[in-house]
Length: 210
Image (cartoon, rainbow, N blue to C red; front, side, top):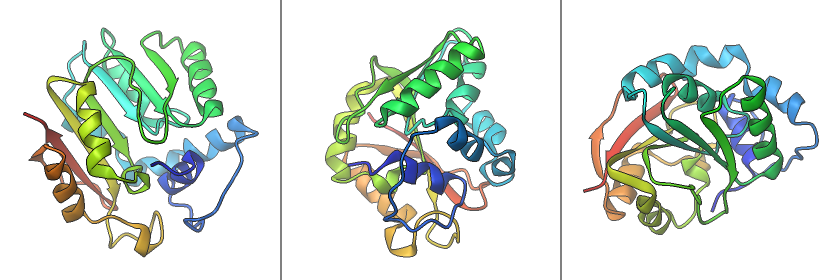
């Protein structure tokens, strides 16, 4: 089960906020300034992530934990003939991202409300991405077994999250190791296809599911 997505998003920018902290979403514009801080690019390396994923122009993508659109907007620009679904458990973030898509004329980007235990992706996709959100999911093997139904044949699942050695992200006891992610997704029926190593604070794992 995902915790408050605001906590997730705070972790995305390396905020030292305690893992159990709770926050409101009354001012999404103010939070967006934090989530979309250009300084994040130095360690998140979004363009290298997109290059590594090598999406075709007509690919369909779902970003679970999409928040204000740091990655979904980039995905939408990379797949002009495809579609990107931003999935979030917070209605204010869903509304914000849909308004952002309208403002930036990204007709191939739409944001949708997910549930704690079900991503509720509207249609099967070529790629599901989860950035700095994996450690907030509970009952993960069951969650990801169910999530496989949202992948097209040959589709991929990309997981990016903070390493146990990183000083960013959640407190140490809340982090999930790369080895644990691999074991849990193997239990859910996935196969590790690649593990790019260029991110300085995070592991990057790409899975397929036969």
